[in-house]
Image (cartoon, rainbow, N blue to C red):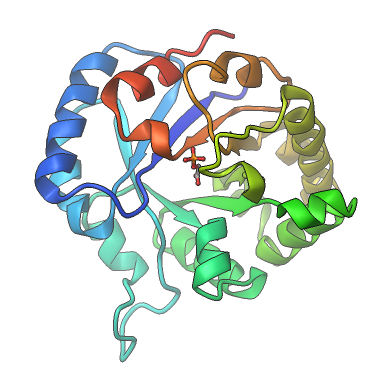
Length: 251
Ligand code: PGA
């Protein structure tokens, strides 16, 4: 009942030329695929080129961040309206690399999500614990705090537009994936937390993606988990053949 989402987070990879080449291949490989929402997330500089290349295809485009003000003296930031104007439909918000290296907090994530929604962008809101937090038994507390803080003050219709990505920090770019059971446990917990905040119906419809070293050889098991509704893919989204296989996961 929840349409799966496979989203590629390209991070700081691909020039305009490389991005165009990659999506040209993806567009061919993935045409005709139904029942999965497919998203790619290029760097800001390649958004226009990628959107234009993908026009009329079944692949949507996400920005990797969005600022919360519409305009002003905010050197280096990009406004929601500017992202929307490129033809993007989604924005990844609160990725752990932003939290870790650029001072992102639940409060700033909350502001960005609000601004993205007002501009008509679908936020993909990232949460996840570090290795230290997992080993000290704090995974659920950390994730609950991130969900509550990041999604504070939203209406039911806002919740309908939000996608969540659970990405354990220790699994990102490390080749270590959460086991299917570990992923399912946290995904279920997130769905219960959403149910507490926004009600059962909204929580049942919410797509919760798993992220962290998703590859062709582990995507099937992960996607078989009841509360896993898709994947946010970093490294493996940079290669057309790997991303194609991931989109064609077997449930
Ligand atoms: P990874 O990245 O697939 O390279 O681990 C996932 C992410 O950070 O979104």
